[in-house]
Image (tube, rainbow, N blue to C red; front, top):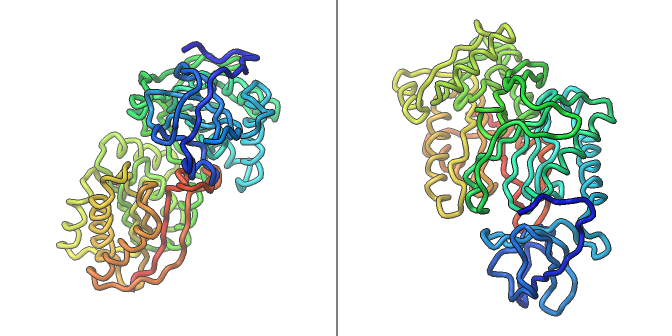
Length: 416
């Protein structure tokens, strides 16, 4: 499929919904599934912009089509008078940047920030993170791939006109989700007007006053999890003089925030040797190597071992990867969350604190809360809720029928 070209706004194909379908879309969503479509009026090419009509012919929107995907259409515009164009894309980019400038707490926060969050910024399938002077893009949909370079050029230009320095753009479209769209997995520097190709892929950033090196080429996702930015700040006040256990530490971000918060000692653990090496380097970058010790271990093995050794901590942090990425495996995932929370609670001294979260969209808020409550009963501990938090506002939650953009649930409890 050829890339999007300036002025290419003509629409020749239409998709008509079945009667009573499109409920999620009509509640504010951007997706139309294959089983919701009654018929096509002229067969569109994959990646082509189509017109979406209700069963009675009422106009609903413009979106890109892909016959390979269960998400058959992703909507870009709901206004018949606003077909997809350069003007519309530039408007979306400007709106995304202006939103971040309003909701992030400081100019420093904008230098390590998610600038485009797919559907929540009305640019479905596209994620762009900023790490200092480098933008990292992930494209997960065939249609948005056609617009990707145009959108990135607009974004780089908008940032530069606002006095922001952007050196280059790196692509991390190497997720298996691309397979479902019939797309190859790709990564590497992109040629974007006004930016350089190539350069160092270990990029320095500052978050909450702490320095990190982000491996944009080999790190998980785009290299660093920005969504926990303010949740990491929230645990600092709990950690003064505390003995802290940070599980699934990844790049060490929670551990380093605990140390900056005045922790007496921090044990940070991850199953990945690569992650532990990177976290260790991040501790050195901040002169915190004496306060934080890192260990490579499987958390499911380590927690029972610490319990057998009668270890106790003032603060236990559980920040696991998503245990489920589909509804089919939610029951198994709940068992995993129940197990680590039960073990974690048993390691917290009476009156200490547990910070625990899930980053799975499918682990819904009510189910996660119920799972934690079950773990508390099994551990014979009582919980006093301190805070319930979500993802940082640069990952905005678009309220829709299925709320696919809402995924991070973060609790802080006192364990009694």
